[in-house]
Image 1 (spheres, rainbow, N blue to C red):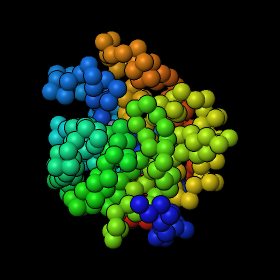
Image 2 (image 1 turned 90 degrees about the horizontal axis):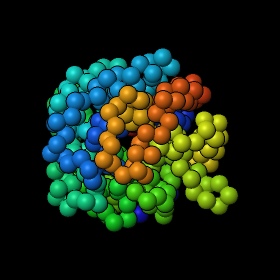
Image 3 (image 1 turned 60 degrees about the vertical axis):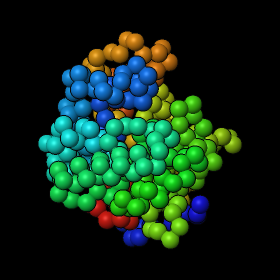
Length: 293
Ligand SMILES: [Zn+2]
């Protein structure tokens, strides 16, 4: 694997801070997958449309452009949402079709899931989809074929690596900055943000960490990442993280519930501060792959 940082085209104008949203519904999260079967998803009343529109409104107020990694399953059921995301100036990208971890799929299954979700999104939006994010940041050392497969089906980049030690995901030995993991191909892997402090690697990429930590600490860590990383700081969150009124999944484990429902109410205000603090742009623009910043 080539771990050297890449030269980002038009680096002088590329955003240093990239905002991203993983568009999935509250019942599709990996932490609940042991108590909610995939074939029961259609039995839940969707909330992802309204929650995603709340994200779009939050971004509009701060003039933020972002990348939305949308599940193919969601896109099929709510094509108007997909068109609205693109129409409001954001990058449309794929979060796969049915939120299966890459590590739980064969190469052929992964290829079909990645191809299918790209095709669905492109058909709806009428524009190419270049970016991909794996469910649960599940591209790691055990899936050496994943990046090559994504390049084969036509993606230009992936933001599927979370280079940190964590019980659900992550690969602490993976590079922290954008790199080209496929030999003789321009394909880029752009990991979400981490930083090293007191000899320890910590995440400052968003999601549950951002909800758990006091805002001031998150801001300090992100500023540190911006200084130290040779590439953009990529942040992520989910629409369900700003939806405090979502129905509770009582049968989930205590640990999963603790993580999922932590500080949902304070999330919109924290995000708003973060959006005001730095000029956030789309992931494609941050990687010099075009796209309005
Ligand atoms: Zn996800």
